[in-house]
Amino acid sequence: MKPQAVIFDIGNVLIEWNPERFYDTVMDPAERRRMFSEIDLHKMNDAIDKGAPFRETVYETAELYPEWRDMIRLWHDRWIDMASPAIPGSVALLRALRSRGVPVFALTNFGIGSFAFAETQYDFLKEFDRRYVSGHMGVIKPDPRIFDMVQEDCGLPPGSLLFTDDRHDNIAEAERHGWQTHLFEGPEGWAERLVSAGLLSREEARP
Image (cartoon, rainbow, N blue to C red; front, side, top):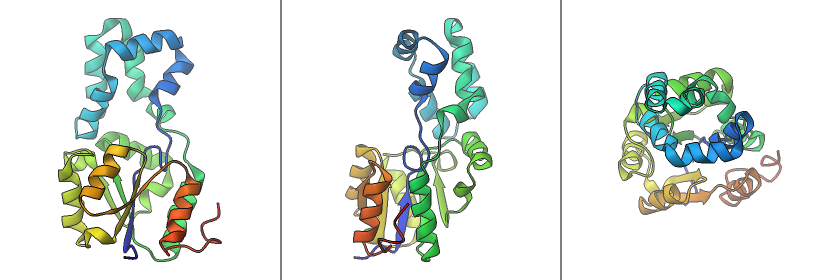
């Protein structure tokens, strides 16, 4: 079935997301590894992605670990340095699809406050036909409920949705829902998938 809509993940598909890389630039990498081994900062971020307040959640976590207080606060204060840069090839494909009139959705694990801030930095985040942001939905991928919510809202047959994400667990859950999928490993492979699906010509899919 030719896809009727294309669904993009955002982190590591349209925007690079690498907190560890950022922290390695502001502290000794060995100390960064120790901090991440002692504190589950990604679990903290999951809470934000489920709708917890951005600044308050980070700052409250920081107060629990005085040794790392200033470093943890950077998760909020310099968040954009972790969520950067944009991935130009993917942005170009998003815009090429829109130029062809293909409905394009976002399905992303993203906090309410962090997404609002990201919109001020990345104009393409406002270009989706529909945006499914986990912080507003109260559930994160790969929970099956978030895929159910997308299906119920968009009203399209599951088999008509083409979804790309960089995480195997999210792709696996989308496949269980009957979606077409593409494991994102770079814009080049994603471009080939869009061409093979008949959504873009090779010319349109070029960066």
